View 1 (cartoon, rainbow, N blue to C red):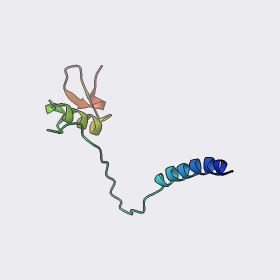
View 2 (view 1 turned 45 degrees about the horizontal axis):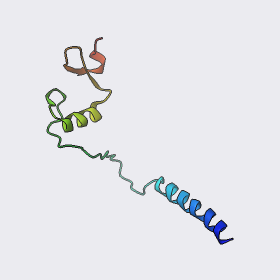
View 3 (view 1 turned 120 degrees about the horizontal axis):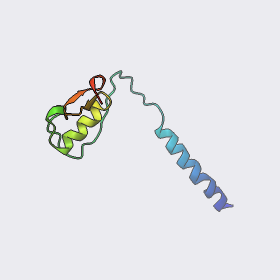
Amino acid sequence: MKKRILALSVPAVAIALVLAGCGNSSSKSSDKVLQTTAQANVETVDPNRVTDVGSDLAVTQTVEGLYKQNNKGKIVRQSQRRS
């Protein structure tokens, strides 16, 4: 009987903890901030001057879908890209 109660209570507690983590926070701030970790130091956020891995990852995450490289390797807006 005790094993059955334990077998039912452990998953119920786990589900309750997962659902509690999904709830809305009580913060009423209208500012939304995205926080992410950098694998390396970010030297620049200018897409045309990126030479290191950390800056490349940061630029890729922030301008994804807005800018692309053209055939000459220059960074241009997505709407100006030519195949």
